[in-house]
Length: 125
Image (tube, one colour):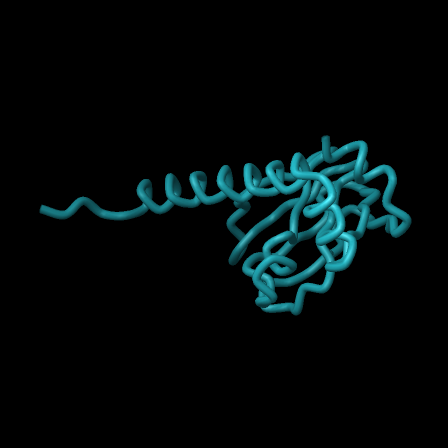
């Protein structure tokens, strides 16, 4: 579903491999969708996810108007669709399927982070 929406976005940027897309703590005015290439999402040099074609990232900043919670850099050369707040709201209200897909992405990431936290925590009695 995202792939079709991403390819229709008017704002597309090209990012070279190794380039920083955003840093943890930056203000987030757009989310991104990967049209081609791969993007690393990481905190303190720990890769949390590799987002490939059809995937999205940076959506949390549009939803809660907070700073970026992680950093993103291009693993490979990328073409990225930029989606601003107004477009995000239009897509979310005009297409319930889009909103549900965003929630699925966020739920999957939360489950992954919970799993990572459980792996690193020490057992208690």
